[in-house]
Amino acid sequence: MPELPFPLEYAPAREATDIVQLAASYGLFIGGAFVAARSGESFMTVNPATEEPLASVAAAGDDDVDAAVGAARAAFPAWSALPARQRSKLLYRVARLLQDRAREFAVLETLDGGKPIKESRDVDVPLAAAHFFYYAGWADKLDYAFPGRQVRPLGVAAQVIPWNFPLLMAAWKLAPALATGNTVVLKPAETTPLSALLLADVLAEADLPPGVVNIVTGGPSTGAALVRHPGVDKVAFTGSTDVGKEIRRAVAGTGKALTLELGGKAANIVFEDAALDQAVEGVVNGIYFNQGHVCCAGSRLLVQEAVADAVIDKLKARLATLRVGDPLDKNTDLGAINSRAQLDKITSLVDAGVEEGATVYQPPCALPPRGYWFPPTVLTGVHPSHRVAQEEIFGPVLSVLTFRTPAEAVAKANNTRYGLSAGVWTEKASKVLWMSSRLRAGVVWANTYNRFDPASPFGGFKESGFGREGGVHGLAPYVRNA
Ligand code: NAD
Image 1 (spheres, helix red, strand yellow):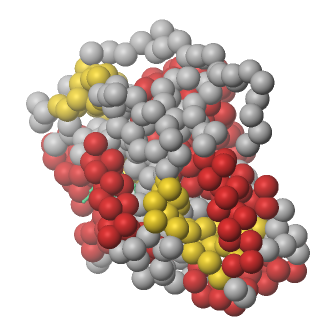
Image 2 (spheres, rainbow, N blue to C red; image 1 turned 180 degrees about the vertical axis):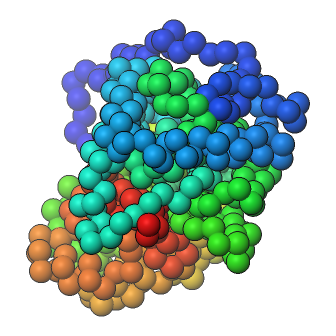
């Protein structure tokens, strides 16, 4: 990089946090009100950037889950019989309130989860609102969504979500379920419960009838109690493949409908004819967005041999400009790792990569003294059999492999138990089409990455799960024939 005649430093640009009013402790949202947990149990949620406790949150036990399912069941007859236009209006109201309170949600999401404020502000919150707008539009048009079919809702949906996009995953789950007339019990992840609890406030403000959405916080045992509850008609889970398998076993033979959105190990494939600078931007966005805590992250770079050195050099130069640190600073590119446990998992997988023979590159960057941090990392010399080429790291770590021919790129890209997403970078549209018809991935992005729109379905093949969220496809898992 050419030397500048003067130092170019960013001034601090910290988002104020006073817009968020945190309670010292939170109960469960059941039957339209916050109630104390019958379990008497609670846990702390911490800010992963500082390790400071934010609030105490109720840990729902079996009785609490039972009460929440009971409230959802009691609310179902009236909610499903409501004129569809009325449901539409309520969803629209939720979307508008999310927009009205966007800054509050963005700051809270960043405090609780560690993601950069520019991402919660520009991606998570606007997309969450967009999902409610989109499904508000479908609620009174189901005859068009299912031509020639009379459909009815399934009943009570149990929805369990992860910590990487807490509000957005809640929106992905709630909006289609409510639009089709189901009632819901939602369980947020234990490290990021706060934005779902703020959403409860919005649902009440929107006058959603009590019991239509219930929110139970807690860890794996709360999730397990919820998906096993006999009063549940449908289970929608987003999370790891291991837990997805466990849930599939638990609901087998119960008659409950099931959709699973699980892990990924996507290939981001760069051909020698691609616009390399744009491709490098796409590779960086693909793996370092949200610290790589993204199920569809482009965690394997497959680069054509002739341009491999050039791409890796450009990538390293770009990494040196990424800003890692305070997630509340508007200039931050990489925030905190979501939890100590996730940091340990990332560290041990990178160590395993080194042991297997990969070479690590990390740009010089000063990490804050407290909190959970991992620098942007590139692993070169990776072989397809290495753990870092096969296992989901779910952190800011890119594994680089090379290929010579399109057929080899397809073979390597599909050499994974997952099948959620892929990226193709080339100037040839014909090559994009040739590749995308052969890649076993639910989403294939061409000359871009991590693009989301509520109208576009999302979901996996193989061990990335089944069922689609988003688009008209996202309605189908919540209805049956009348
Ligand atoms: P996780 O599976 O550990 O937990 C996800 C949720 O399930 C949490 O709310 C957790 O409390 C709950 N849970 C844990 N054990 C449970 C059990 N036995 N029964 C019921 N619920 C249980 O996953 P995570 O670490 O929170 O999330 C990361 C994973 O999620 C990654 O693998 C990522 O790829 C995946 N993910 C997938 C998508 C997608 O759309 N495909 C989106 C986001 C994240």
